[in-house]
Image (cartoon, rainbow, N blue to C red; front, side, top):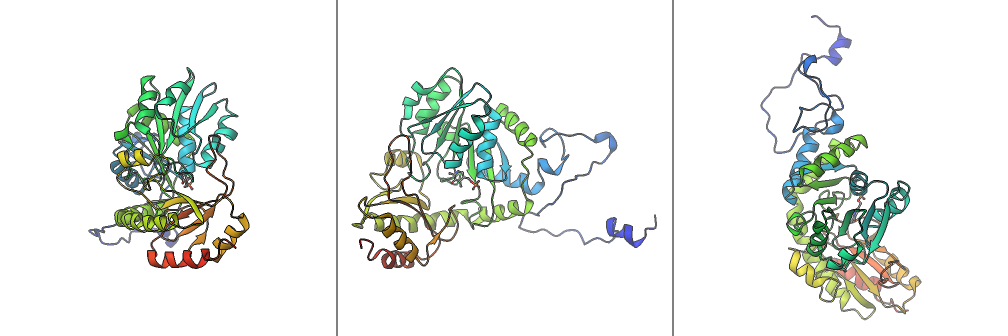
Length: 387
Ligand SMILES: *Cc1c(COP(=O)(O)O)cnc(C)c1O
């Protein structure tokens, strides 16, 4: 067929030579994916059952990222979501139904709680917040209508390390699944499935992305029935992800090992330095003795990451702490963590149902700057904190 130039724009005959083999995964963009015959048309999200049928259900770029997250976490299947919060809501909307009950640790990521209070409640699901360190005591909280138990290890901001195996054993004794927010461990510093978890999620936004320039989340399972339940909901909620973000996350994975090793070392240096200061009452870092759940961290984790909190002495005024934080040069003030830049975030008056950690809490995220420079920055900013 001889084509006009307008049609050639859409149906070119020109082609690049074949045979290029890059080390990088190609970034496939596509909503439509083609069928080889009208007789082969079908529509299913699961490429294990059917060939590619629609871009929303995954492209080779997103499916490779998912497969690699599942491989690292020791799961079998991984779904990608537009962010970590979407991963949390996907798990809830997949497994909870009206009349049900969900147990969430009191120190869970804030929007996890808000999703339960503002969305799940509207759908008739009752959320209960339990003390994160109760371990096997979770058994007493399980009700006949409980449908899911959440864990987060360590918990957001107050950093308690949970006895996940004990919680999982109690939940499994009555046939309940356990979901874990495994963001802190980047899916690698804590073996979630090995410790009894059934569903893990991560904000890939944090360590896998690693450069504060993308938003992505993941939900990983081993069990086939959970895979089908979550996959179905994932499709029907329309949780598509950008292939460009997936490509950046695939690149992030390549340096995750060296970044985590450096971040662990630098973070411990800063955390110990802060713990030794007179104006700091306590440092909440899982690898520091005395931090809540430290013994469990030693038992269950293979390393620590870049985020921790410091409690400044209660008699210091919030204004004095704000002035000190504003004097920081290298540390920036902003949410999120796991990137290359050091951050601080005040959580003054952080509320917890089960014991508030203290009024003057500041969360630190350590980046890839030289730890000597970070300490110098903290030293100058906090020099006259007491004034
Ligand atoms: C950041 C974070 C999330 C949410 O991730 P987003 O990608 O920002 O939606 C969930 N859980 C934890 C523990 C987080 O720190």
